[in-house]
Image: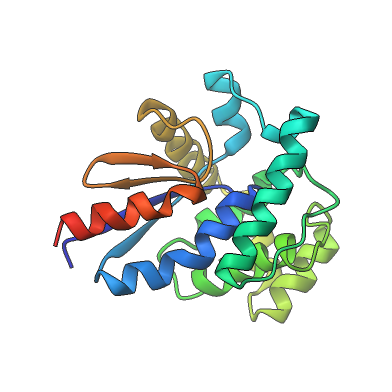
Length: 197
C-alpha cells in the first residue's frame, strides 16, 4: 500500500470529527493507509497566532450551521458539545498512547462520539472512564498511560512537527507531501489520491 493520508487532528475539533467519519471509507476506495497524527490544537493556535472560529461570534454561528450541513450530507450524527471549548490534552495523550495498538480504533471512536454525538463532558475523569469502559478499553490503563513521559513527549513532538510543516488548524491532511486544511476540503484530498493512482 503506497498511498497514504496523514491526518493531523484534535478530538476537541468538531471539524476533525466530521473528517474522521469520512476518512476510513475514502482510504478504502483508494487503497490508502491513514497515518494518524494526534496533535494539540491549542498549542498550534498559540504557536501560529490563530484562534478558533468560535471566538468570533458571527463566524462561530456560521461554523455551527455549516457543520450541521456537512453532517446531514455525510449522514452522521452531530451535536455541538455544550462544554466546548474543552481541554483535550489528557484525551489526546491517551489517543497517542494507543497509536498502533489494537485498542486504538475503539478508543478514538468512543471519544469522538462522546464529544460530538453524545455531547458529554469529556473533561470529567468519571465520564471518560465510563465511556472507555463501555468501549472495552481499560480506563485505569488509559489514565496511567497519559502520565507517562514517553507519551507526553510523543504528542509534543507531533504537535511541533505539525507547526513546522505549516499546519495552523485542524483537521489537516497531507497526501504526497501536499497539505489540505479543513474537513470541507476532503474533495481535494480525494482528488490527490486519484492523481496518485
